[in-house]
Length: 137
Image (cartoon, rainbow, N blue to C red; front, side):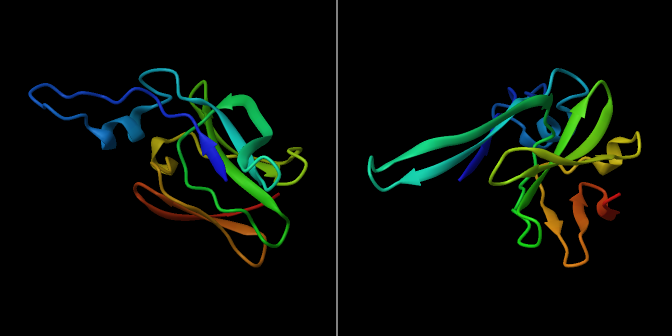
Protein backbone atom coordinates (compact mmCIF):
# COMPACT_ATOMS: atom_id res chain seq x y z
CA UNK A 1 0.00 0.00 0.00
CA UNK A 2 1.18 3.54 -0.74
CA UNK A 3 -0.06 6.80 0.78
CA UNK A 4 0.68 10.51 0.59
CA UNK A 5 -0.50 13.61 2.40
CA UNK A 6 -3.18 15.96 1.05
CA UNK A 7 -3.40 19.72 1.69
CA UNK A 8 -6.37 21.59 3.11
CA UNK A 9 -9.02 21.99 0.40
CA UNK A 10 -9.84 25.33 -1.19
CA UNK A 11 -13.29 26.65 -0.28
CA UNK A 12 -14.60 28.92 -3.02
CA UNK A 13 -16.85 31.87 -2.11
CA UNK A 14 -20.52 30.88 -2.02
CA UNK A 15 -19.81 27.14 -1.84
CA UNK A 16 -20.92 25.06 1.08
CA UNK A 17 -18.86 22.03 0.08
CA UNK A 18 -15.13 21.89 -0.29
CA UNK A 19 -13.90 22.23 -3.85
CA UNK A 20 -11.41 19.48 -4.68
CA UNK A 21 -10.41 20.44 -8.24
CA UNK A 22 -9.00 23.90 -7.36
CA UNK A 23 -7.12 22.26 -4.49
CA UNK A 24 -5.49 19.72 -6.79
CA UNK A 25 -4.54 22.38 -9.33
CA UNK A 26 -3.23 24.98 -6.91
CA UNK A 27 -1.39 23.04 -4.24
CA UNK A 28 2.26 23.90 -4.30
CA UNK A 29 1.52 27.24 -6.00
CA UNK A 30 -0.93 29.00 -3.67
CA UNK A 31 0.33 27.32 -0.49
CA UNK A 32 2.86 24.68 0.52
CA UNK A 33 2.07 21.36 -1.13
CA UNK A 34 1.84 18.21 0.94
CA UNK A 35 5.11 16.64 1.98
CA UNK A 36 5.66 12.93 2.24
CA UNK A 37 4.85 9.62 0.62
CA UNK A 38 4.94 6.35 2.46
CA UNK A 39 4.97 2.67 1.57
CA UNK A 40 3.25 0.17 3.85
CA UNK A 41 3.50 -3.61 3.88
CA UNK A 42 0.98 -6.01 5.38
CA UNK A 43 2.42 -8.09 8.22
CA UNK A 44 0.83 -11.52 8.57
CA UNK A 45 2.38 -11.82 12.03
CA UNK A 46 0.91 -8.64 13.53
CA UNK A 47 -2.08 -8.49 11.15
CA UNK A 48 -1.40 -4.80 10.56
CA UNK A 49 0.13 -2.45 8.00
CA UNK A 50 3.74 -1.59 8.81
CA UNK A 51 5.79 1.25 7.36
CA UNK A 52 8.38 0.09 4.81
CA UNK A 53 9.80 3.52 3.97
CA UNK A 54 8.99 7.22 4.02
CA UNK A 55 9.90 9.82 1.36
CA UNK A 56 10.06 13.38 2.74
CA UNK A 57 12.59 15.11 0.46
CA UNK A 58 10.22 17.32 -1.59
CA UNK A 59 6.68 18.66 -1.63
CA UNK A 60 4.29 16.56 -3.66
CA UNK A 61 1.83 17.22 -6.44
CA UNK A 62 -0.83 14.64 -5.65
CA UNK A 63 -0.66 11.73 -8.10
CA UNK A 64 -1.84 8.15 -8.37
CA UNK A 65 1.43 6.34 -8.92
CA UNK A 66 1.53 2.66 -9.90
CA UNK A 67 4.80 0.76 -9.49
CA UNK A 68 6.64 0.00 -12.71
CA UNK A 69 6.92 -3.74 -13.27
CA UNK A 70 9.98 -3.18 -15.46
CA UNK A 71 12.25 -1.52 -12.91
CA UNK A 72 10.27 -1.73 -9.62
CA UNK A 73 10.13 2.05 -9.40
CA UNK A 74 7.35 4.36 -8.31
CA UNK A 75 7.34 7.77 -10.00
CA UNK A 76 6.25 10.74 -7.91
CA UNK A 77 5.44 14.20 -9.21
CA UNK A 78 6.98 16.73 -6.87
CA UNK A 79 6.53 20.48 -6.83
CA UNK A 80 8.89 22.72 -4.95
CA UNK A 81 9.74 26.38 -5.49
CA UNK A 82 7.59 26.41 -8.64
CA UNK A 83 9.51 23.53 -10.28
CA UNK A 84 7.75 20.27 -11.09
CA UNK A 85 10.11 17.32 -10.98
CA UNK A 86 9.35 13.63 -11.33
CA UNK A 87 11.41 11.46 -9.05
CA UNK A 88 11.75 7.71 -9.36
CA UNK A 89 11.90 5.84 -6.05
CA UNK A 90 12.92 2.17 -5.94
CA UNK A 91 9.86 0.38 -4.52
CA UNK A 92 11.93 -2.06 -2.46
CA UNK A 93 14.85 0.06 -1.21
CA UNK A 94 13.37 3.63 -1.27
CA UNK A 95 16.51 4.86 -3.06
CA UNK A 96 15.92 7.66 -5.57
CA UNK A 97 16.97 6.36 -9.01
CA UNK A 98 15.57 9.01 -11.38
CA UNK A 99 15.15 12.79 -11.44
CA UNK A 100 13.26 14.29 -14.37
CA UNK A 101 12.75 18.08 -14.41
CA UNK A 102 9.45 18.94 -16.11
CA UNK A 103 8.81 22.15 -18.05
CA UNK A 104 8.11 25.17 -15.81
CA UNK A 105 4.35 25.22 -16.42
CA UNK A 106 1.26 24.26 -14.44
CA UNK A 107 0.08 22.33 -17.54
CA UNK A 108 2.04 19.23 -16.45
CA UNK A 109 0.24 19.13 -13.09
CA UNK A 110 -1.07 15.58 -12.73
CA UNK A 111 -3.97 16.86 -10.59
CA UNK A 112 -4.55 13.52 -8.91
CA UNK A 113 -4.30 11.51 -12.13
CA UNK A 114 -2.01 8.62 -13.08
CA UNK A 115 1.60 8.26 -14.08
CA UNK A 116 1.80 5.19 -16.32
CA UNK A 117 5.17 3.41 -16.65
CA UNK A 118 5.45 2.14 -20.25
CA UNK A 119 7.35 -0.92 -21.54
CA UNK A 120 10.09 1.20 -23.18
CA UNK A 121 10.91 2.84 -19.77
CA UNK A 122 9.17 6.07 -20.74
CA UNK A 123 6.33 7.49 -18.65
CA UNK A 124 2.88 8.67 -19.68
CA UNK A 125 1.43 11.30 -17.36
CA UNK A 126 -2.21 12.18 -17.60
CA UNK A 127 -2.02 15.84 -16.70
CA UNK A 128 -5.05 18.06 -16.20
CA UNK A 129 -4.50 19.50 -19.71
CA UNK A 130 -3.97 16.21 -21.54
CA UNK A 131 -1.41 13.41 -21.67
CA UNK A 132 2.33 13.89 -21.95
CA UNK A 133 5.00 11.26 -22.62
CA UNK A 134 8.23 11.61 -20.69
CA UNK A 135 11.40 9.71 -21.55
CA UNK A 136 13.75 8.88 -18.71
CA UNK A 137 17.24 10.37 -19.13
